[in-house]
Length: 111
Length: 125
Image 1 (cartoon, rainbow over the protein chains, first blue to last red):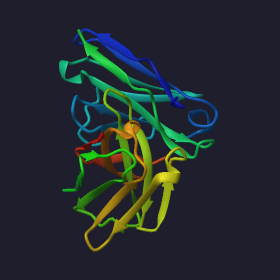
Image 2 (spheres, helix red, strand yellow; image 1 turned 30 degrees about the vertical axis):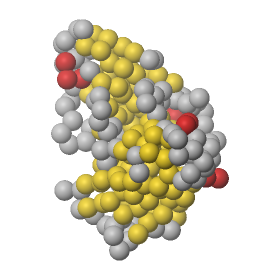
Image 3 (spheres, rainbow over the protein chains, first blue to last red; image 1 turned 45 degrees about the vertical axis):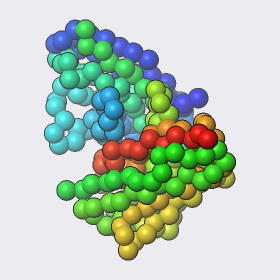
Image 4 (tube, rainbow over the protein chains, first blue to last red; image 1 turned 90 degrees about the vertical axis):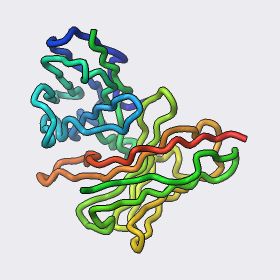
């Protein structure tokens, strides 16, 4: 069982805004550890979208944004595009397990 | 351009040892600024971090695999490796290697900015 919980799926029409949540606990996100977000297109390796809660690597569109509050974090995708259809994972560190942890993953479907 | 490439056996018999190598080009794995991790993803499931190695000496493993796991490095070939003993069908997965990137502002944990393309390892007789 993962230390970080995500909703299994979200969907939206092209152009809409969707939000993916990542819920943790006092031993990971709530302890102040940063949250990173990854996009995994079918059959490919994950790609970092957001690092350190709200920073975009070079080349990632500003349609992607991240935030963190308390024991949770969120990834927002605005202006949803067909190419955004993928699995998304949050990632942090859990001090009680002493491991890097991933969320359970959220599948984004573009209607 | 930094690149990582996994290689190894795609089919391993139960109770045997799974061995994989990640060849790195574009940066030395001995660079003090980075660590190097292994992950796996069972078919249709989520990502699991397995462990990392730093400067070929320091390692950290996920507790659930620690008794069966060894991560090592070959500096002469600029590659690092994963050995997982006594495998079962539950170890069937796509295995990835990646670089740990640490935020210069001292934030933690690191994120994983460069990944290999992944290698499917099936445990079956």
